[in-house]
Image 1 (cartoon, rainbow, N blue to C red):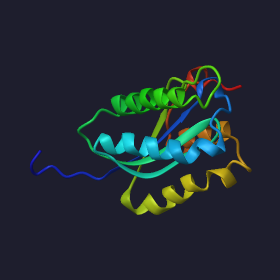
Image 2 (cartoon, one colour; image 1 turned 135 degrees about the vertical axis):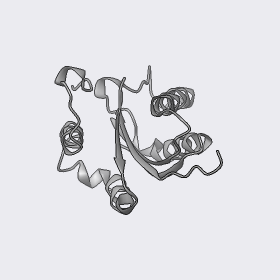
Image 3 (cartoon, rainbow, N blue to C red; image 1 turned 90 degrees about the horizontal axis):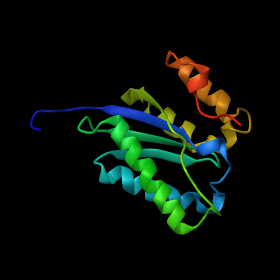
Length: 152
């Protein structure tokens, strides 16, 4: 679209179904590259990505031409297929339903990228559940416990 300009920075967070620890450290780099390619194929820019064993953080420069829900659904479906085809997991692999999406301003890019890249150290001090609840509270997002991720 001519004369349309935007700066939208979104952090996406979603977990594995049943919060299983299935993403192995040996596979993370290849999975990061694949998901980055999926993001780029949707005319978005990957700013940071990090998979933990049971969840993922994506920080994306986002274009308003795509619905957020469609974007996440396509990333999840295609990365599910990729992981299944690689046979990294004995049995089934699925992302859990739902996700968190949090917006940031341009001045926060470096801080958010650093936060995502330091997930290993961060999760030595805080669980994913505590981290996710902190995001919801920090961004004043109303929620009901029964609709949050399935916690083990």
